[in-house]
Length: 430
Ligand code: LRH
Ligand code: MN
Ligand code: MN
Image: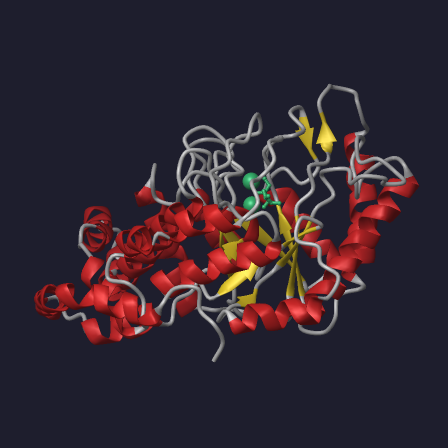
Protein backbone atom coordinates (compact mmCIF):
# COMPACT_ATOMS: atom_id res chain seq x y z
CA UNK A 1 0.00 0.00 0.00
CA UNK A 2 1.17 3.48 -0.78
CA UNK A 3 4.07 4.82 -2.78
CA UNK A 4 7.53 4.42 -1.32
CA UNK A 5 10.17 6.89 -2.50
CA UNK A 6 12.82 4.23 -3.23
CA UNK A 7 12.21 1.14 -5.32
CA UNK A 8 11.92 -1.81 -2.90
CA UNK A 9 13.30 -4.14 -5.59
CA UNK A 10 16.44 -2.06 -5.82
CA UNK A 11 17.03 -2.36 -2.05
CA UNK A 12 16.41 -6.11 -2.27
CA UNK A 13 18.75 -6.54 -5.21
CA UNK A 14 21.46 -4.51 -3.47
CA UNK A 15 21.25 -6.91 -0.54
CA UNK A 16 21.72 -10.09 -2.57
CA UNK A 17 25.55 -10.02 -2.78
CA UNK A 18 25.73 -9.67 1.02
CA UNK A 19 23.20 -12.26 2.12
CA UNK A 20 25.56 -15.23 2.26
CA UNK A 21 28.13 -13.41 4.38
CA UNK A 22 25.43 -11.96 6.59
CA UNK A 23 24.06 -15.41 7.31
CA UNK A 24 27.50 -16.78 8.13
CA UNK A 25 28.34 -13.76 10.36
CA UNK A 26 25.00 -14.12 12.12
CA UNK A 27 25.43 -17.88 12.60
CA UNK A 28 28.90 -17.37 14.02
CA UNK A 29 27.67 -14.72 16.44
CA UNK A 30 24.70 -16.91 17.40
CA UNK A 31 27.11 -19.74 18.19
CA UNK A 32 29.27 -17.46 20.35
CA UNK A 33 26.23 -16.14 22.18
CA UNK A 34 24.90 -19.65 22.66
CA UNK A 35 28.10 -20.52 24.54
CA UNK A 36 27.20 -17.71 26.92
CA UNK A 37 23.66 -18.96 27.29
CA UNK A 38 22.15 -16.20 25.12
CA UNK A 39 19.57 -17.13 22.50
CA UNK A 40 20.40 -15.02 19.42
CA UNK A 41 16.97 -15.65 17.90
CA UNK A 42 15.31 -14.13 20.97
CA UNK A 43 17.60 -11.11 20.78
CA UNK A 44 16.88 -10.79 17.06
CA UNK A 45 13.16 -10.79 17.83
CA UNK A 46 13.53 -8.00 20.39
CA UNK A 47 15.74 -5.96 18.06
CA UNK A 48 13.22 -6.42 15.24
CA UNK A 49 10.59 -4.78 17.44
CA UNK A 50 12.74 -1.79 18.41
CA UNK A 51 11.91 1.62 16.92
CA UNK A 52 12.99 5.23 17.33
CA UNK A 53 11.29 8.33 15.91
CA UNK A 54 12.87 10.83 13.50
CA UNK A 55 12.56 14.56 14.22
CA UNK A 56 11.14 16.32 11.17
CA UNK A 57 13.75 19.06 11.62
CA UNK A 58 16.57 16.52 11.60
CA UNK A 59 16.08 16.03 7.86
CA UNK A 60 17.38 19.54 7.20
CA UNK A 61 20.89 20.90 7.64
CA UNK A 62 20.00 23.03 10.67
CA UNK A 63 23.43 22.61 12.10
CA UNK A 64 24.72 25.51 14.05
CA UNK A 65 23.09 28.45 15.73
CA UNK A 66 25.18 30.77 13.61
CA UNK A 67 24.68 29.89 9.99
CA UNK A 68 23.00 27.50 7.68
CA UNK A 69 24.85 25.88 4.77
CA UNK A 70 22.10 24.10 2.89
CA UNK A 71 22.75 21.30 0.44
CA UNK A 72 21.00 21.02 -2.88
CA UNK A 73 17.94 18.83 -2.59
CA UNK A 74 17.32 19.51 1.10
CA UNK A 75 13.63 19.39 2.09
CA UNK A 76 11.94 22.75 2.55
CA UNK A 77 8.53 21.73 3.91
CA UNK A 78 6.90 18.92 5.87
CA UNK A 79 5.87 17.09 2.70
CA UNK A 80 9.45 16.85 1.51
CA UNK A 81 10.65 16.07 5.04
CA UNK A 82 8.20 13.16 5.18
CA UNK A 83 9.61 11.84 1.91
CA UNK A 84 13.13 11.92 3.34
CA UNK A 85 11.89 10.20 6.50
CA UNK A 86 10.29 7.52 4.33
CA UNK A 87 13.63 7.00 2.58
CA UNK A 88 15.31 6.57 5.97
CA UNK A 89 12.64 4.12 7.10
CA UNK A 90 12.91 2.11 3.89
CA UNK A 91 16.65 1.75 4.38
CA UNK A 92 16.98 1.16 8.13
CA UNK A 93 13.48 -0.13 9.02
CA UNK A 94 13.58 1.06 12.65
CA UNK A 95 12.29 4.62 12.21
CA UNK A 96 8.60 4.30 11.30
CA UNK A 97 7.45 7.51 13.03
CA UNK A 98 8.12 11.21 12.62
CA UNK A 99 8.05 13.77 15.40
CA UNK A 100 6.84 17.11 13.99
CA UNK A 101 7.59 20.60 15.30
CA UNK A 102 5.07 23.44 15.11
CA UNK A 103 4.77 25.93 13.57
CA UNK A 104 7.75 24.75 11.50
CA UNK A 105 5.62 21.94 10.04
CA UNK A 106 2.36 23.85 9.79
CA UNK A 107 -0.09 22.86 7.03
CA UNK A 108 -3.76 23.63 6.42
CA UNK A 109 -5.08 20.06 6.44
CA UNK A 110 -3.74 17.66 9.07
CA UNK A 111 -6.07 14.81 8.19
CA UNK A 112 -4.56 14.89 4.70
CA UNK A 113 -1.05 15.08 6.21
CA UNK A 114 -1.72 11.95 8.24
CA UNK A 115 -2.87 10.13 5.10
CA UNK A 116 0.17 11.38 3.23
CA UNK A 117 2.45 9.97 5.94
CA UNK A 118 0.50 6.74 6.04
CA UNK A 119 0.92 6.33 2.29
CA UNK A 120 4.66 6.69 2.80
CA UNK A 121 4.63 3.99 5.49
CA UNK A 122 5.00 6.49 8.34
CA UNK A 123 3.11 7.49 11.46
CA UNK A 124 3.56 10.46 13.79
CA UNK A 125 5.22 10.52 17.18
CA UNK A 126 5.22 13.28 19.83
CA UNK A 127 4.25 16.77 18.67
CA UNK A 128 6.75 19.47 19.66
CA UNK A 129 5.61 22.99 20.41
CA UNK A 130 7.80 26.00 19.73
CA UNK A 131 7.57 29.04 21.96
CA UNK A 132 11.26 29.85 21.79
CA UNK A 133 10.93 31.94 18.63
CA UNK A 134 8.57 34.72 17.66
CA UNK A 135 6.54 34.09 14.54
CA UNK A 136 5.89 36.85 12.02
CA UNK A 137 3.09 39.13 13.19
CA UNK A 138 2.87 37.57 16.64
CA UNK A 139 0.83 39.77 19.05
CA UNK A 140 3.14 39.28 22.07
CA UNK A 141 6.87 38.61 22.03
CA UNK A 142 8.64 35.68 23.68
CA UNK A 143 11.70 37.87 24.16
CA UNK A 144 11.11 37.71 27.92
CA UNK A 145 10.03 34.10 27.99
CA UNK A 146 6.90 32.22 27.00
CA UNK A 147 5.13 30.05 29.58
CA UNK A 148 6.95 31.93 32.35
CA UNK A 149 6.82 35.42 30.85
CA UNK A 150 5.83 38.34 33.07
CA UNK A 151 3.54 39.38 30.22
CA UNK A 152 0.17 37.65 30.64
CA UNK A 153 -0.45 38.06 26.92
CA UNK A 154 2.74 36.19 25.99
CA UNK A 155 1.88 33.43 28.47
CA UNK A 156 -1.62 33.09 27.06
CA UNK A 157 -0.25 32.94 23.52
CA UNK A 158 2.22 30.20 24.50
CA UNK A 159 -0.50 28.21 26.27
CA UNK A 160 -2.81 28.59 23.28
CA UNK A 161 -0.05 27.43 20.90
CA UNK A 162 0.55 24.30 22.97
CA UNK A 163 -3.17 23.54 23.03
CA UNK A 164 -3.24 23.98 19.26
CA UNK A 165 -0.35 21.49 19.04
CA UNK A 166 -2.42 18.99 21.01
CA UNK A 167 -5.29 19.52 18.58
CA UNK A 168 -2.95 18.97 15.60
CA UNK A 169 -1.54 15.92 17.37
CA UNK A 170 -5.04 14.45 17.75
CA UNK A 171 -5.57 14.77 14.04
CA UNK A 172 -2.28 13.17 13.06
CA UNK A 173 -2.42 10.34 15.60
CA UNK A 174 0.08 11.49 18.23
CA UNK A 175 -0.35 10.92 21.93
CA UNK A 176 2.46 12.98 23.42
CA UNK A 177 3.12 16.70 23.55
CA UNK A 178 6.77 17.57 24.12
CA UNK A 179 7.28 20.95 25.74
CA UNK A 180 10.69 22.52 25.76
CA UNK A 181 10.94 26.19 26.63
CA UNK A 182 14.03 28.35 26.37
CA UNK A 183 12.72 30.53 29.20
CA UNK A 184 15.25 31.74 31.73
CA UNK A 185 17.54 34.66 32.39
CA UNK A 186 20.88 35.93 31.19
CA UNK A 187 21.70 38.25 34.08
CA UNK A 188 21.73 37.80 37.83
CA UNK A 189 18.72 39.61 39.25
CA UNK A 190 16.94 39.68 35.89
CA UNK A 191 13.97 37.80 37.29
CA UNK A 192 12.67 36.39 40.55
CA UNK A 193 13.71 32.73 40.13
CA UNK A 194 10.84 31.43 42.28
CA UNK A 195 8.07 33.51 40.75
CA UNK A 196 9.28 32.69 37.24
CA UNK A 197 8.77 29.02 38.01
CA UNK A 198 5.34 29.81 39.53
CA UNK A 199 4.28 31.39 36.27
CA UNK A 200 5.65 28.43 34.27
CA UNK A 201 3.74 25.97 36.45
CA UNK A 202 0.54 27.95 36.16
CA UNK A 203 0.78 28.04 32.34
CA UNK A 204 1.86 24.40 32.14
CA UNK A 205 -1.19 23.41 34.25
CA UNK A 206 -3.46 25.05 31.68
CA UNK A 207 -1.85 22.99 28.91
CA UNK A 208 -2.01 19.88 31.08
CA UNK A 209 -5.74 20.30 31.60
CA UNK A 210 -6.23 20.31 27.81
CA UNK A 211 -4.58 16.87 27.40
CA UNK A 212 -6.99 14.25 26.05
CA UNK A 213 -7.25 10.84 27.71
CA UNK A 214 -4.25 8.66 27.01
CA UNK A 215 -2.06 11.68 26.27
CA UNK A 216 1.14 12.66 28.02
CA UNK A 217 2.94 15.95 28.39
CA UNK A 218 6.69 15.44 28.17
CA UNK A 219 8.73 18.12 29.90
CA UNK A 220 12.16 18.48 28.31
CA UNK A 221 14.79 20.01 30.55
CA UNK A 222 17.95 21.73 29.34
CA UNK A 223 20.66 23.27 31.44
CA UNK A 224 21.35 26.35 29.37
CA UNK A 225 20.90 28.09 26.02
CA UNK A 226 19.38 30.41 24.99
CA UNK A 227 19.28 31.47 28.66
CA UNK A 228 22.80 31.35 30.06
CA UNK A 229 22.44 32.50 33.65
CA UNK A 230 19.40 30.46 34.65
CA UNK A 231 16.88 28.31 32.81
CA UNK A 232 13.40 27.67 34.19
CA UNK A 233 13.39 23.90 33.57
CA UNK A 234 17.13 23.50 33.76
CA UNK A 235 17.59 19.94 34.99
CA UNK A 236 15.87 16.69 35.85
CA UNK A 237 15.19 17.98 39.37
CA UNK A 238 13.15 20.95 38.17
CA UNK A 239 11.57 18.71 35.56
CA UNK A 240 10.41 15.98 37.95
CA UNK A 241 9.15 18.53 40.49
CA UNK A 242 7.11 20.22 37.77
CA UNK A 243 5.87 16.86 36.46
CA UNK A 244 4.88 15.77 39.96
CA UNK A 245 3.00 18.98 40.56
CA UNK A 246 1.20 18.79 37.22
CA UNK A 247 -0.04 15.22 37.61
CA UNK A 248 0.29 11.66 36.30
CA UNK A 249 0.11 12.58 32.61
CA UNK A 250 3.19 14.78 32.95
CA UNK A 251 6.52 12.99 32.47
CA UNK A 252 10.13 13.97 31.99
CA UNK A 253 12.01 13.80 28.72
CA UNK A 254 15.78 13.37 28.73
CA UNK A 255 17.76 14.88 25.87
CA UNK A 256 21.27 13.48 26.15
CA UNK A 257 22.87 16.80 25.16
CA UNK A 258 21.03 18.89 27.73
CA UNK A 259 23.28 18.26 30.72
CA UNK A 260 26.59 19.48 32.01
CA UNK A 261 29.56 17.50 30.65
CA UNK A 262 30.17 14.22 32.49
CA UNK A 263 26.82 14.22 34.28
CA UNK A 264 25.73 10.66 35.04
CA UNK A 265 22.75 10.50 32.69
CA UNK A 266 22.18 6.78 33.23
CA UNK A 267 21.57 7.52 36.88
CA UNK A 268 19.06 10.22 35.93
CA UNK A 269 17.27 7.61 33.83
CA UNK A 270 17.12 5.25 36.80
CA UNK A 271 15.90 8.02 39.12
CA UNK A 272 13.15 9.20 36.80
CA UNK A 273 11.97 5.64 36.28
CA UNK A 274 12.01 5.02 40.03
CA UNK A 275 9.38 7.73 40.39
CA UNK A 276 7.37 6.73 37.32
CA UNK A 277 8.34 9.87 35.47
CA UNK A 278 10.52 8.70 32.60
CA UNK A 279 8.50 9.76 29.55
CA UNK A 280 10.91 10.07 26.68
CA UNK A 281 14.33 10.41 25.18
CA UNK A 282 16.08 12.58 22.66
CA UNK A 283 19.12 10.73 21.41
CA UNK A 284 22.18 12.58 20.19
CA UNK A 285 25.77 12.97 21.30
CA UNK A 286 27.86 15.87 22.48
CA UNK A 287 31.37 16.92 23.31
CA UNK A 288 30.62 20.24 24.99
CA UNK A 289 26.94 21.09 25.34
CA UNK A 290 23.79 20.72 23.27
CA UNK A 291 25.90 19.81 20.26
CA UNK A 292 23.29 17.58 18.60
CA UNK A 293 25.97 15.34 17.11
CA UNK A 294 25.18 11.88 15.74
CA UNK A 295 24.24 9.36 18.41
CA UNK A 296 27.16 7.32 19.60
CA UNK A 297 29.70 9.43 17.72
CA UNK A 298 31.43 10.74 20.85
CA UNK A 299 30.50 8.50 23.74
CA UNK A 300 28.88 5.25 22.63
CA UNK A 301 29.65 3.69 25.98
CA UNK A 302 27.43 6.21 27.74
CA UNK A 303 24.67 5.39 25.29
CA UNK A 304 25.10 1.73 26.16
CA UNK A 305 24.92 2.49 29.90
CA UNK A 306 21.74 4.48 29.32
CA UNK A 307 20.23 1.52 27.47
CA UNK A 308 21.38 -0.76 30.24
CA UNK A 309 19.18 1.26 32.63
CA UNK A 310 16.34 1.29 30.13
CA UNK A 311 16.43 -2.51 29.92
CA UNK A 312 16.46 -2.73 33.73
CA UNK A 313 13.44 -0.42 33.71
CA UNK A 314 11.69 -2.54 31.11
CA UNK A 315 12.24 -5.64 33.23
CA UNK A 316 10.90 -3.86 36.30
CA UNK A 317 8.25 -1.54 34.87
CA UNK A 318 6.99 -0.36 38.29
CA UNK A 319 4.02 1.84 37.36
CA UNK A 320 4.52 1.42 33.65
CA UNK A 321 7.43 1.92 31.31
CA UNK A 322 6.71 3.34 27.90
CA UNK A 323 9.25 5.99 26.93
CA UNK A 324 9.01 7.81 23.60
CA UNK A 325 12.34 7.45 21.80
CA UNK A 326 13.44 10.05 19.29
CA UNK A 327 16.65 11.04 17.54
CA UNK A 328 17.31 14.77 18.08
CA UNK A 329 20.18 15.98 15.96
CA UNK A 330 20.98 18.55 13.40
CA UNK A 331 23.93 18.95 11.10
CA UNK A 332 25.87 21.30 9.00
CA UNK A 333 28.50 19.04 7.54
CA UNK A 334 26.78 15.79 6.53
CA UNK A 335 23.78 14.78 4.50
CA UNK A 336 21.08 14.59 7.22
CA UNK A 337 19.69 11.34 5.83
CA UNK A 338 23.09 9.69 6.20
CA UNK A 339 23.50 11.08 9.70
CA UNK A 340 20.11 9.80 10.83
CA UNK A 341 20.92 6.39 9.35
CA UNK A 342 24.21 6.40 11.24
CA UNK A 343 22.51 7.41 14.50
CA UNK A 344 19.75 4.84 14.11
CA UNK A 345 22.43 2.16 13.73
CA UNK A 346 24.35 3.38 16.81
CA UNK A 347 21.18 3.44 18.90
CA UNK A 348 20.18 -0.05 17.77
CA UNK A 349 23.69 -1.27 18.58
CA UNK A 350 23.61 0.02 22.13
CA UNK A 351 20.11 -1.31 22.67
CA UNK A 352 21.21 -4.73 21.40
CA UNK A 353 24.35 -4.76 23.54
CA UNK A 354 22.25 -3.88 26.58
CA UNK A 355 20.02 -6.85 25.78
CA UNK A 356 23.10 -9.10 25.90
CA UNK A 357 23.94 -8.16 29.49
CA UNK A 358 23.78 -11.25 31.67
CA UNK A 359 21.22 -9.81 34.11
CA UNK A 360 21.38 -12.78 36.46
CA UNK A 361 25.15 -12.50 36.78
CA UNK A 362 24.95 -8.73 37.13
CA UNK A 363 22.37 -8.86 39.90
CA UNK A 364 24.27 -11.60 41.69
CA UNK A 365 27.51 -9.60 41.52
CA UNK A 366 25.65 -6.58 42.85
CA UNK A 367 24.12 -8.62 45.68
CA UNK A 368 27.51 -9.96 46.74
CA UNK A 369 29.31 -6.64 46.17
CA UNK A 370 31.59 -8.24 43.60
CA UNK A 371 32.39 -4.95 41.91
CA UNK A 372 34.82 -6.30 39.34
CA UNK A 373 32.42 -9.02 38.19
CA UNK A 374 29.54 -6.55 37.90
CA UNK A 375 31.70 -4.32 35.76
CA UNK A 376 32.96 -7.27 33.69
CA UNK A 377 29.40 -8.37 32.97
CA UNK A 378 28.72 -4.99 31.40
CA UNK A 379 32.02 -4.97 29.55
CA UNK A 380 31.43 -8.45 28.13
CA UNK A 381 28.14 -7.29 26.60
CA UNK A 382 29.53 -3.99 25.39
CA UNK A 383 32.44 -5.56 23.56
CA UNK A 384 30.32 -7.83 21.35
CA UNK A 385 30.02 -6.77 17.70
CA UNK A 386 26.25 -6.96 17.36
CA UNK A 387 26.27 -5.74 13.74
CA UNK A 388 25.10 -9.06 12.26
CA UNK A 389 21.98 -9.14 14.48
CA UNK A 390 21.03 -5.60 13.54
CA UNK A 391 21.72 -6.15 9.86
CA UNK A 392 19.69 -9.38 9.95
CA UNK A 393 16.73 -7.60 11.59
CA UNK A 394 16.96 -4.83 9.02
CA UNK A 395 17.23 -7.08 5.98
CA UNK A 396 14.38 -9.28 7.26
CA UNK A 397 12.23 -6.15 7.51
CA UNK A 398 13.00 -5.17 3.90
CA UNK A 399 15.72 -2.64 4.76
CA UNK A 400 19.19 -2.37 3.27
CA UNK A 401 22.17 -4.45 4.36
CA UNK A 402 24.28 -1.31 3.98
CA UNK A 403 21.86 1.63 4.45
CA UNK A 404 24.29 4.47 3.66
CA UNK A 405 25.74 2.61 0.67
CA UNK A 406 22.25 1.89 -0.68
CA UNK A 407 21.24 5.51 -0.11
CA UNK A 408 24.21 6.77 -2.10
CA UNK A 409 23.48 4.31 -4.84
CA UNK A 410 19.88 5.49 -5.06
CA UNK A 411 21.09 9.01 -5.88
CA UNK A 412 18.06 10.29 -3.97
CA UNK A 413 19.63 13.62 -3.05
CA UNK A 414 20.85 14.21 -6.57
CA UNK A 415 17.37 13.61 -7.93
CA UNK A 416 15.81 15.88 -5.32
CA UNK A 417 18.35 18.59 -6.10
CA UNK A 418 16.78 18.78 -9.54
CA UNK A 419 13.19 18.87 -8.25
CA UNK A 420 13.19 20.78 -4.97
CA UNK A 421 13.44 24.51 -4.58
CA UNK A 422 16.60 25.63 -2.84
CA UNK A 423 16.60 26.37 0.87
CA UNK A 424 17.07 29.99 1.86
CA UNK A 425 19.97 30.99 4.04
CA UNK A 426 19.22 31.95 7.62
CA UNK A 427 19.88 31.21 11.22
CA UNK A 428 20.03 27.60 12.29
CA UNK A 429 17.69 26.10 14.83
CA UNK A 430 18.07 25.79 18.56
C1 LRH B 1 16.07 22.13 22.42
C2 LRH B 1 15.70 20.96 21.59
C3 LRH B 1 14.24 20.54 21.71
C4 LRH B 1 13.62 20.85 20.40
C5 LRH B 1 14.78 20.92 19.46
C6 LRH B 1 14.62 21.71 18.21
O1 LRH B 1 17.45 22.35 22.44
O2 LRH B 1 16.53 19.87 21.90
O3 LRH B 1 14.07 19.17 21.78
O4 LRH B 1 12.65 21.78 20.41
O5 LRH B 1 15.88 21.29 20.22
MN1 MN C 1 15.72 17.80 22.32
MN1 MN D 1 18.60 20.45 22.27
